[in-house]
Image (cartoon, rainbow, N blue to C red):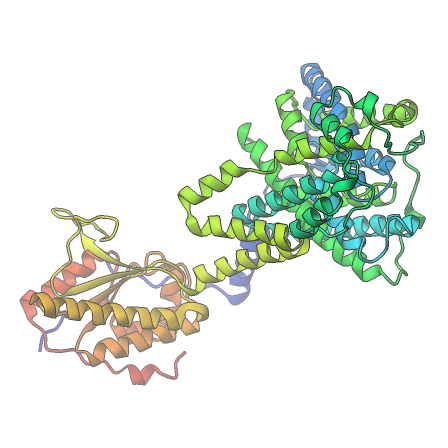
Amino acid sequence: MGTTEDYECPRRVPVPPSKPFLKSLQTSLKETFFPDDPFKQFKNQPTSWKFLLGLQYFVPILEWAPRYTFDFFKADLIAGITIASLAVPQGISYASLASIPPIIGLYSSFVPPLIYAMLGSSRDLAVGTVAVGSLLISSMLGKEVSPTENPEQYVRLVFTATFFAGVFQASFGILRLGFIVDFLSHATIVGFMGGAATIVCLQQLKGMLGLVHFTHETDVVSVMSSVFGQIHQWRWESAVLGCCFLFFLLLTRYFIGHLKKGLNPLSTSELVFGSPHLMAAVKTGIIIGVIGLAEGIAVGRTFAMFKNYHIDGNKEMIAFGMMNIAGSCTSCYLTAGPFSRTAVNYNAGSRSAVSNIIMATAVMFTLLFLTPLFHYTPLVVLSSIIVSAMLGLLDYEAAIHLWKIDKFDFFICLGAYLGVVLGSVEIGLVIAITVSLLRILLFVARPRTIVLGNIPNTGIYRSMDQYPIAKTVPGILILQIDAPVYFANASYLRERISRWIYEEEDRLKSVGETSLHYVILDLSAVGSIDTSGISMFEEVGKNVDRKGLKLVLANPQSEVMKKLHKSKLIDTIGQEWIHLTVGEAVAACNFMLYTCKPDPVVVDYNAQDNNV
């Protein structure tokens, strides 16, 4: 009977030294919650300096303000005034979208930007109200309290929802849970934002056509039914006014009402924690908080990439949360980092968050002296402003890009879009999150297994699908597992590996080639494994053994080797059948196959059944 004693393996795969459980747990928690190692800067520093560094970490303006120059200020002054000219009409327009008094939209561009400028880490993000959040507030809270029949209670609920959004956002940042926002993929955000933008644009037909009565539903069928059900009430002059915009002072008769002068009044007493609609406010706060974070952080990262700097997701969450908590107490509603305003800020040459301070100062001046001038702003003009801003969110180029690159991502995007347009904003959000999580589960539960072949005249082994020139090795099946092995995918991998073996044996019989003798599993992509994965390898070993074959492992990672050692599976397989590379594993198999000509190997896997 053949043995491996005559074959010298050039390099053995060592079993790493085991770490104490608490040490391993500490490492895992650190990598999960502190991947950026925020405590590194405090090492070997005196106590007084640690205190200063701590303040700079939580209040970033203290870190960059000493280096601020007059040239930066000149650039930020221009950018701040530019975005203030956009903030005033957008604030009024989005407030009407949220069914709240327009003055609240202006208030929301004063206090929150000041808070963000102190706590935020982005140099380019311009803070303000957002259309999607405004639409969510109107659609969700409007079902609980009518903004027309009971406007005061409705506004209180809006402030309360904003407060809970801030608490939720800040809690995410403090607890270092920023990675959760990453579960909303780019495809779902593109589809959700596009669907929300479509609904917002369609709802502006009320103002564009001069309609008085309009549906409160947000799906496209209800909106279009409301539009075409009132054809006899269409005001064509309003439609022309909205399209031309040059004649709006001559043709319109609908105004937004009186805007009172003065800065934000305190609204702490307006927060209704004892309201029977409290749970609706909490639910709305959580949803608009998530959307605000997803959009704001995505926008911030996009523009940070253009200037080659990094923003801290957890700091952003704390900054967003604190500005919304402060905003809810000063007559503001949800604020985030809208793409349109940030793009204007970036293109205007902003150099730091001071542009937000300039914008807030300009809005303060407007609140104190200029609000009466907005008394005669036409509704159709506000509708036009909203539509022009929303068209930028209809990112059809991104959808086309998704179709070209990844069809599955495109259908995720399409599903989120149709969920919003045909259902509601809430349904679209649920679909977006559900589909994102479903895709993650599919990646985990159905990992790829790849057949590897040898690139001719080399010792390299690669996917035979990717490299058509790769050749199979006679008598050997080489499989690569392309993911960690967990309970969620262990059963699938067991069945898939067995099927690969059946298919290879059938192929060899059909072409009359050398029968199969060895199955090599390349574990280079398997970063971790649990007890279900160990059991899977044992069952695969039994299945291979029953067929008279031999299981060989190649390049198991550190954590995998630890688990194989502790479960005694290394002893069962044989240390000599665990190799550093696929090439060395193939060399060992060829040596045994053509030199020793071994008899079928019988391994007692049953002796290990109780070790896992």
